[in-house]
Image (cartoon, rainbow, N blue to C red; front, side, top):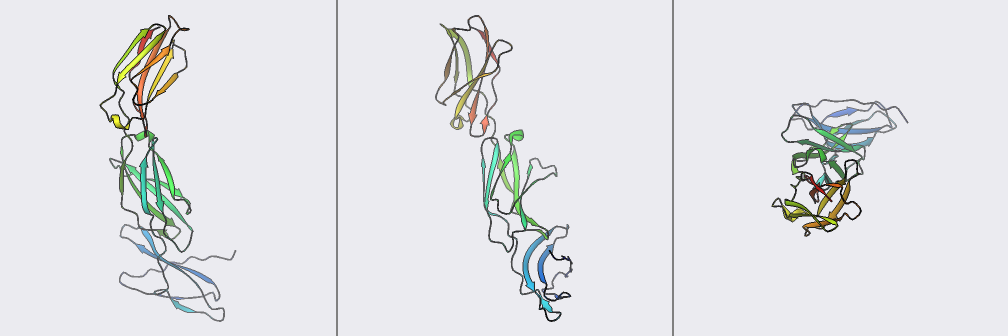
Length: 256
């Protein structure tokens, strides 16, 4: 690979062209037009490739040959599911693939901290874990980043992660014949989003957790205790939605 040189030419605001004298006949030039904002941010707004003549030093202008280079992602979709944001986007054609796709986000209230996920140029989807901030609102923006700077950023998209559901109402535990019956009422907290009820229970103090998953229309479970007579059961229940398992109830204790 030949030697690569990097040179920056500052052009005053209002000027629409500049002249570059080639010092290396026959070389390929990569010209990037970069816009620098007052706060120092740089955005690539044009790019072109030119090869100079091999016969003599060449004088050429870059005002007409530059074409749009880095265009921010388009058609952005954000779905909150399973303790995560599933983000997808489309990339418009670019003049080169030497860039990263950046998914940048913060959690409200904004404290000045952004989290950047740098992804390869051929990626059009990413998952952001929201398990530590369930129910929180996020601000999300996407843009492209190259060695020459950044594309314009998309407008900030506000998205809220799934809020954990409360446990069902009126939980009751009784023994009946050789079984424990745990019953409940459907909660008033967004009952339409419930996909399952999750019942966890332990037998004795050192038992591993046992789990029963029910459908959303069911309001009780029977637990066989024929071989566990006299032992203490600890039971708790939660609702499961597309966003994950919600808050569990307090443990209910009963002797089989």
